[in-house]
Image (cartoon, rainbow, N blue to C red):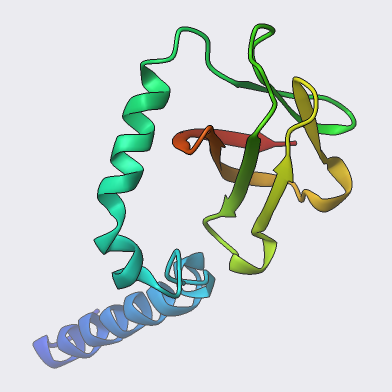
Length: 149
């Protein structure tokens, strides 16, 4: 320790700082995540967002709302028993925030009170289920957070 001078301290401090910066780059996983936009047509959809707000408000005012449940078959979406399913088109989007390639979009004609999103198309992780349906030319929409295990 006799030969340790302030120059040695500066070199050690600089080396420690460089090691810290390199560890931030290589050891933390945030740099490896995909950062994708939610949609490719962001600005066009933003202009039509008032329609989404109105559809969500109409869905919130319903006495009984559609619910989802997870089964071994997949995600089952059930409409209320007294709901008349004629003239009803249901669109759903399962949005994966971490990988756009795992998104699922589909439109179905509701024939009964429920339908199932098959487990084969789902991967383990977090989804946002955007359920929209049109009944007699009136739009409704509900969003659910789903954790598929």
